[in-house]
Length: 135
Image 1 (cartoon, helix red, strand yellow):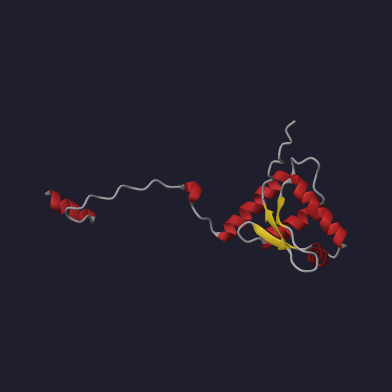
Image 2 (cartoon, helix red, strand yellow; image 1 turned 45 degrees about the vertical axis):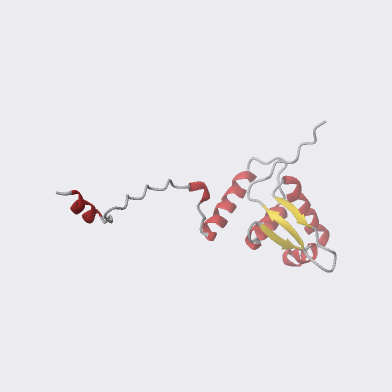
């Protein structure tokens, strides 16, 4: 079989080299949003067993709500709206949010103005290491 016939059967054009296969970039592949959410929940709940001190059940519920509402890693929230959502006092929702912030699951990106705008928080499925205070 001549070379031109072999290329034609293989679907190659005459005179053009075959493209080199591109290596797969597994780390840069964009995940389906549902798969991303489920993986985030799995990572979060996988970290809870080994955590000391343990997070309160309210803080876990608050993280689940923030993770459900997050877009591109950020969620908007106010203590008052969170308190209404969970049926608790605003001070309790603030305490849960502070608990998540201390554990490294939530980071405040932009603080809102009381009565005017919501705070913007970064929600993480795995805790961020607290900044070291070198001496």
